[in-house]
Length: 133
Image (cartoon, rainbow, N blue to C red):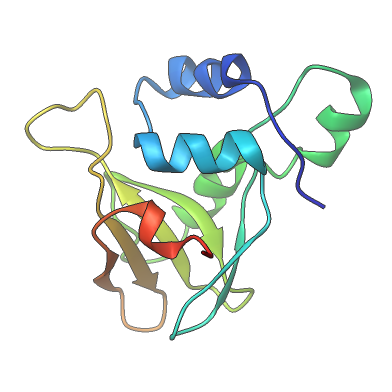
């Protein structure tokens, strides 16, 4: 069950990895740290940011973005400059790619990584496009 997360907890993850997530993603996660995104292609479970504000939240967010990205990188073809923020339970992932023009942040574009083919496709120009109205 997703729940709000303070921006300071997102900032801790960003400091740890040295990259800032797109604003629309940050805002969505501050409102609901985790949850799901449903697209034409699939249903995706969002990985939470690690929330250290109390023991219960720490336990609920142990499958955080950093941990899940480390696991994702074991897949052949996973983008070296990508971070996994969701999966569909079958090995495919929603990823953000580090900006080539500013390596301190991710591109706003949201991509999918298809593990069977190694294909990376644009899913949305911005994470806000994936949010329910």
